[in-house]
Length: 128
Image (cartoon, rainbow, N blue to C red; front, side, top):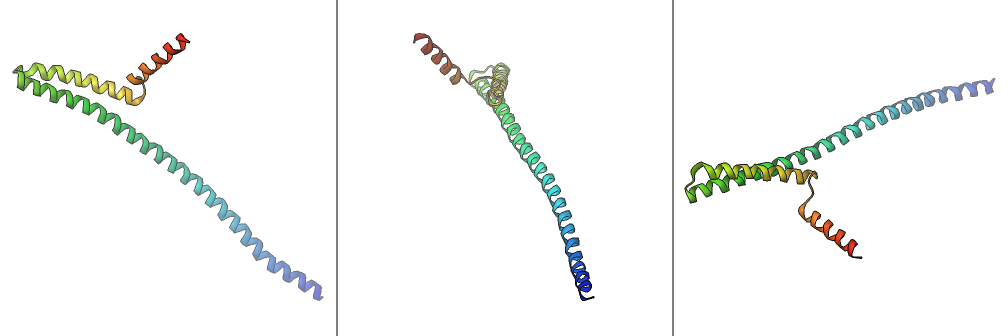
């Protein structure tokens, strides 16, 4: 009889531990799911923040080109007395320079120094 009571006690003690282990496993799974979701949102926010930085860089490149062109045109008009023509011409040149700066910063157009270096490398290869 005493052996049966001992087995029942072990089962009674083991039962709450098994329940706790099962609950802990469920909580761990939920935490893992939450961590995965948080990592995905963190990656998205990092990529969007770097995208915002790139957009700010490109827009400032363009605006700087236009403003510098307009400023030079206005100063040229004041100095030479050719009222709207210098401003118009240099504003257009500033626009073109701004677009070119944006294309260079985005990597669409190659930097002039890189092109010269590549041509030198080609010439050196031909002379060998």
